[in-house]
Image (tube, rainbow, N blue to C red; front, side, top):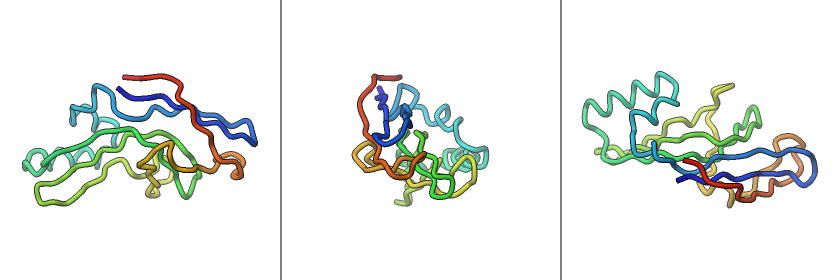
Length: 130
């Protein structure tokens, strides 16, 4: 079960909801991978076919684009390979393709308002999702 957080800027009218954590689908790698770009889906399929995946974690995190300055919640898939390597899927901006800054601690990190670029977002729990 995931949590819904609402982020608000105390200096302007910006507010946004973030659906964070993992829902029931997060235990199914194939279904979760459907949110990824096709090239990343293909890499995951190949890893699975070659039995290279030791374990995986699917979770929604707050992400921030250094180019677009967008802040959103996004599904990130972490895969631990049997070779000991860590693979991250979903870490690129859907708009510009730049590598996103993933806020692994979600609402515990300070986030500058993407609208006014001055205020620090204040987060409050707004509910649960699945």
